[in-house]
Image (cartoon, rainbow, N blue to C red):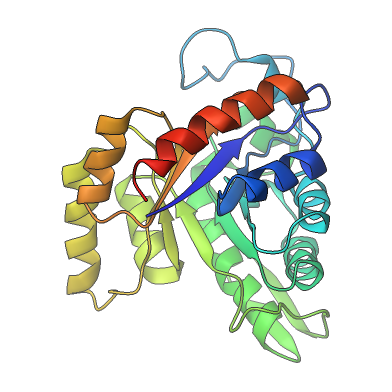
Length: 276
């Protein structure tokens, strides 16, 4: 099992270039960054974690800019979004951003996506929360077309475009792996139909990890790796996921200044070393 880091990179924490280098030095294989374009002041949608929305949600850097900075100082680190809020993004621009990062990093992108939870944030982007799942399904199909076809076109209910040229193409073939976040029936259906990897949250029971693995196999999908996003350094929890056949476990790193971050990474590295 590989170990990575998931975190929020903000303007008042460690720089992403320094973070990426520190992760690779300590043997972590990946960095997954959260995304929020903005946080509406209305705050009508309750925070899923309960209580007040943490400061980090207001201050996240653009994940593709931050991951590009991390790519410059590394050579092996997987550069992941965890998750990119695809339903709030222009599909064509996103295709170019992902492909450009994959080119700059020489093929190290893991494109994690999800439908999000903040309905006011979605509305500001013109996204209808009631149809966001159907929109994402079409977006994933359209992205694959843009990445793999010389003249890409797509005609759906929510997206429609005639043939066009879009370069660069990704380094990874046929395209960077799409990590589908979420544990709902809709998310799992999306995983089976459009995804290349699963990005469940740490509260997912290990029995569910095994069940989903078996369920995917029944559909002929025996090629889907699982990565837990934002886990704790609890050795017993990690062992449970390892026994369930998890391919990667990412520790949730608090957003802190450089010195405190490096110390926390040393602690995580010691935990990970016990499973190698």
